Image 1 (cartoon, helix red, strand yellow):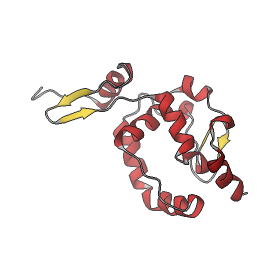
Image 2 (cartoon, rainbow, N blue to C red; image 1 turned 45 degrees about the horizontal axis):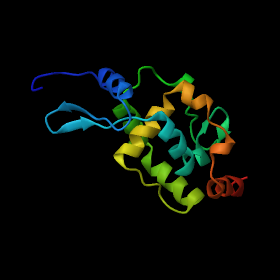
Image 3 (spheres, rainbow, N blue to C red; image 1 turned 90 degrees about the vertical axis):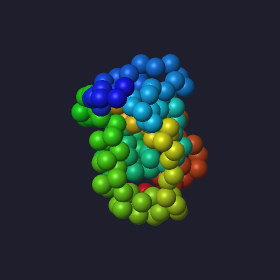
Image 4 (cartoon, rainbow, N blue to C red; image 1 turned 180 degrees about the vertical axis):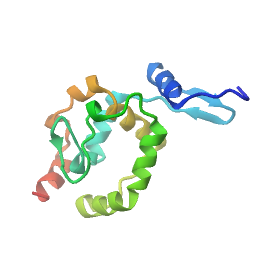
Length: 143
């Protein structure tokens, strides 16, 4: 693969087409983890992203909505992560205020959440029923 240039869109399209658990080697020593939108839906709620962000009108209003219909398509997952990094100080402060601690993600979890943020079909399934009681509690405290 030396000398091969892959666009982020091509990498993302390849990753989303892979069977669950598969990974794509995109360069020597670099791979793109699988991206599972269904797992991302669960993580979006259980990690607490939903406390500040909303999808389908479900969730908080302290941060931008993450409806797939408003996302650039195709989305570069690295661009999405860079936007998170740019807003990191404010996000960390809000997480500590709203949840009592900073949210921790693995690379695979972040890949899944990014996949969910860009999958309109999976987002249609998202509802308040996805939000665990401990996260709902945090959401109610802010009201």
